[in-house]
Length: 209
Length: 232
Image (tube, rainbow over all chains, first blue to last red; front, side, top):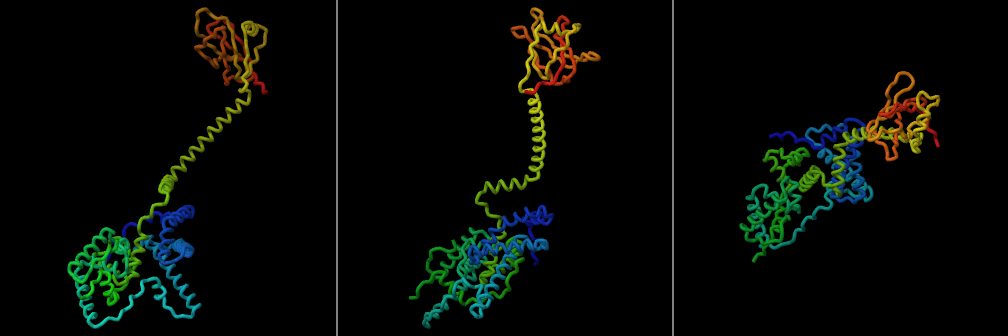
């Protein structure tokens, strides 16, 4: 089933003003910058950039935005999403550039994926375990997997996003477009159900607050 | 006896075995549609399940949501509010400013005119005392020339008064040509010394000769000739 038509873009009047004439353009450009500069800067900071580098990339993003705004026609992507896409492109270009620079300097072959995954959680080292313990763990895993599968889909997602990726309630809410309160309630319900059904689980302090 | 695990520990163990999501990464348009609640529920669930196995897409969805969120309130909400109001009222304000400028300019011109008038002798208004004898000398039918009075001067007139008459009228009319009333003022009351303090109106033309009459009177008129005020 095709998605429904896009919602009204709250930035459209501003973009139209930018298009209208050069006289209006300066004011509209300034307003666009004021409206999104902090968001773009925060985007780069969350990617791990220092303040000065984030500032430079923010500047580059807005330079690309105003360069391409004449061609922007809206359609499926509302202005904020289009700007987000440009910020992502600037980030990817910078990653490629840095990757090339590192490779040139160190002479190492590092894949782009490796570079981008810097900062992610390290894989948990596999510990050596004896045969009996291994059987027990397999049974537990199977039971846990079965019980998680019984949870409603949204509850499953919340639980696994929190436990797999370490996202907190607010982040899960943003990713799934549900309120943080709903996430909290779903996580509570999920934990409660698993505790009721799996005897090998013990209590833990908190979950996704 | 086997040790107990927390849910986190147990699920982390599952994660190691979990295969990556078989579904392809959702496009930016699809993520946008998810955030705008335009996706059918099955597709939305499919994307949300993809997030479980693909941290990058989940992170991307979070970043997009932060971009789509309404602008954060400024550090100084009042300033931001003021700026919004100014933006909305910019054109009406400009029009008002233009009108105010025109009005101010008009007021400035009027003030300037007043200053010019004051500078042309109004600051030290000449006071001219004309007593009864002088009137007689200058009256019509006499060979005396008219009394020269500076424009805007204050005349102190002491005419013969009728007993018990509280109010009088002063009339100034042209002397040359037909008798035309130029200015009059009613309800004038004499001072305790029996004088009238009368300021000559500005619409009398310099160089012209006028007849000044106090009514009721005994036909004793004063002929005056308006002259330019002396500059100090």
